[in-house]
Amino acid sequence: ERFLDNCARAYKKMLMLDFRGDRELLFEFAVIFQGIMLQHLVGGLLCLPAVLGCSWVPRSVASALACHGALCEVGWEIQDTLVRLKERVCDGESGRKKNPASFMAALLLHHAFSQCLVLPLNMYYRDNSYYHEAVLLLQAASMAAMVCQSYGFTLDVSKPAEMRQMQVAVSAAFLVVVWSRLLRYAYIWYVLIVNFLADENMFVLRLAMPPLIMGSLFNILVLADFFKKFAKFVLFPRSAGEDTQDWCEGYSGQKSVDQ
Image (cartoon, rainbow, N blue to C red; front, side, top):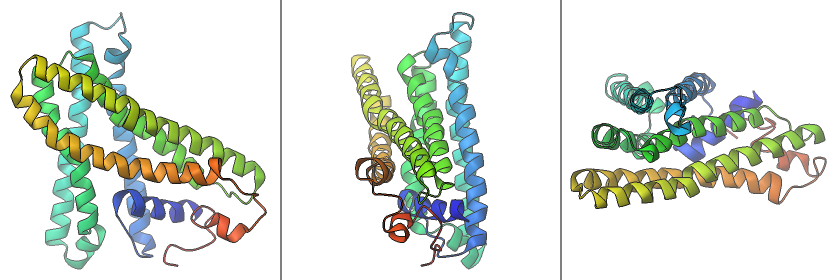
């Protein structure tokens, strides 16, 4: 119950998805979300040989694996979009409740990145190591941060030992997100845009700018949520025994989602 309560709050903040106390829909989405993280892990791991420069993997094979890792994300996003559109159009009130307009807008910010960029970059920059690293960070790094966050969702911070575990999990997740969706993210895309300009590839450059802007807006949502947790548990911690009910709101499961 604690895990589901915290998932509900996280989905509302990051994905604009509010289940309004419907535990069945919340449980269904929480299960689906674990599958999404597995897909991100697989897609990210396919990029590792290219990013690490493994000598035992031919360069052409490593590039092909990285491109397939990116296509893995594209394929999932296409089916996800089609399924959710079908639910909104054909499943009546139930489908609209599962996929509210605010959630669909958040998905647009997320999905635009891969849908607009993967095929052109696979065609023109399939051997570019910065492209491979971008795919790795946006998939595997995201999965790592969400695993840390999910573990934190199971902890009761009113207990000192679990409070310390929460601080470690929150710190690890925040550092991964800052690196993958802010610092390294900005540098990688700066280098790629410079490459597009140097090659005078206006086609890819024009395709890149809108999803880059939308993807950056999505990153802001993610960074804001992870920073809030980091600030609450690490920067401004309070005694686990002090004002426990208020302190645990949103993390210990003491209050239900619809309160």
